[in-house]
Image (cartoon, rainbow, N blue to C red; front, top):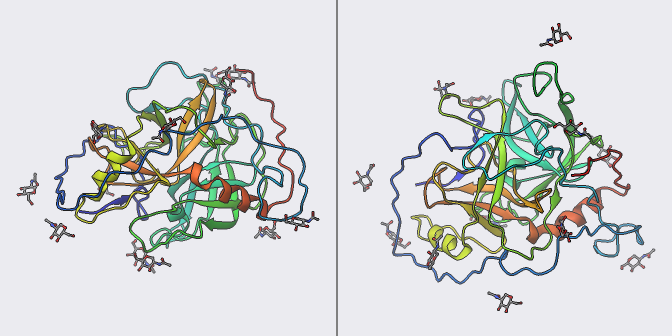
Length: 353
Ligand SMILES: *[C@@H]1O[C@H](CO)[C@@H](O)[C@H](O)[C@H]1NC(C)=O
Ligand SMILES: *[C@@H]1O[C@H](CO)[C@@H](O)[C@H](O)[C@H]1NC(C)=O
Ligand SMILES: *[C@@H]1O[C@H](CO)[C@@H](O)[C@H](O)[C@H]1NC(C)=O
Ligand SMILES: *[C@@H]1O[C@H](CO)[C@@H](O)[C@H](O)[C@H]1NC(C)=O
Ligand SMILES: *[C@@H]1O[C@H](CO)[C@@H](O)[C@H](O)[C@H]1NC(C)=O
Ligand SMILES: *[C@@H]1O[C@H](CO)[C@@H](O)[C@H](O)[C@H]1NC(C)=O
Ligand SMILES: *[C@@H]1O[C@H](CO)[C@@H](O)[C@H](O)[C@H]1NC(C)=O
Ligand SMILES: *[C@@H]1O[C@H](CO)[C@@H](O)[C@H](O)[C@H]1NC(C)=O
Ligand SMILES: *[C@@H]1O[C@H](CO)[C@@H](O)[C@H](O)[C@H]1NC(C)=O
Ligand SMILES: *[C@@H]1O[C@H](CO)[C@@H](O)[C@H](O)[C@H]1NC(C)=O
Ligand SMILES: *[C@@H]1O[C@H](CO)[C@@H](O)[C@H](O)[C@H]1NC(C)=O
Ligand SMILES: *[C@@H]1O[C@H](CO)[C@@H](O)[C@H](O)[C@H]1NC(C)=O
């Protein structure tokens, strides 16, 4: 039995498993029963989702957040697409939906650029992803970040022929990749599976490229999360079009219990989230580093988690594991401040939704 990271070494790049049936033989080691005491950190958060951007930096380069300007942009999580109704399975995303989604490209040993992981834009110079997408035995270092992609097979993506078209894909080079310092590449537990990509150049925001907000505090229990990526279908190994799917949260203590009963028990900590567990609706290989998203008031999008790993894909009763972004907000902000001292300003005018 083995746990699958949500990236696939080298060639296999598929995402959702919502069509392909995942028939597996579950062999649980029920002799290992850990007490299920861990509460879902999402459950009892109070406070609001208010934008916390504040004024000027008072003090050059300390690590103390709160004394400094919030490095996260004020304008985030907005897309020029209105979501209607609840999604029951995976379906193609609309043009311009999830404009923060990034494709992380690597070079294989033949120097071809290959897709291996996802990430998401959180400011004009930073992409958030999973640490194992930055330090991976199979993929090597991230070579490029592609933003504003929709259909990987077309140069220009349009809604219809000659109708509204998106801008060309933006290709960004990497200045530095910053895995979380506590991430242990050799540990099977994948704790602290989070990392930042510092881009060489600032990204210009458009309707098709813009940042998502990071969840800070939650005063409600989400009833659904969203995932998006480029996925596998029954007939194709990799869909060319960005897909999306909604998945339910999974109770943390049940999840902890479930993973602790595996032959090789996995320790799920509070800094991780569980979601999914419905048949054929899941994140899978290739989705690593992508966001586990929440929509607030139907209009504002927040990243709550980072796709980390799971036990196979799309298997009934088996939620996947996500790095809980709320546990790393300070690290993210402090790291961003360390790497940048410029102001984050967005010129794009967002439509009023
Ligand atoms: C599941 O595992 C058990 C025990 O290892 C084995 O006897 C059984 O044939 C397996 N079933 C399938 C469908 O592989
Ligand atoms: C279950 O785990 C225990 C303790 O790690 C081990 O002794 C036992 O052999 C395992 N059983 C199976 C069936 O893997
Ligand atoms: C959740 O918060 C409420 C109100 O603050 C409190 O009464 C309750 O005990 C908390 N529950 C848990 C599990 O912490
Ligand atoms: C910056 O902050 C540190 C720690 O809070 C403080 O010791 C230092 O005096 C501050 N420097 C300035 C220029 O405000
Ligand atoms: C190149 O990749 C192939 C397939 O992944 C692997 O078998 C081979 O050892 C690699 N060659 C080098 C020089 O890394
Ligand atoms: C689309 O535009 C091209 C040239 O811009 C034109 O030749 C073609 O007829 C147009 N097609 C439609 C369906 O309008
Ligand atoms: C990376 O960023 C630093 C600081 O912003 C800059 O000095 C350096 O030249 C950059 N390096 C590359 C390769 O872009
Ligand atoms: C990383 O994980 C490996 C395997 O679990 C362990 O042996 C090693 O001590 C860990 N390293 C650190 C720095 O914790
Ligand atoms: C999917 O990938 C597998 C393994 O690389 C290959 O054998 C198969 O032909 C591919 N299928 C399609 C439809 O491309
Ligand atoms: C979680 O576990 C509790 C008892 O431990 C059980 O009542 C509940 O149905 C479980 N929920 C799910 C979704 O498995
Ligand atoms: C959601 O709507 C409520 C009421 O209109 C508002 O107070 C709150 O700030 C909104 N939240 C976000 C994240 O936009
Ligand atoms: C938002 O999208 C619609 C089509 O979905 C388009 O007509 C409208 O111009 C867009 N708004 C902006 C500000 O581009």
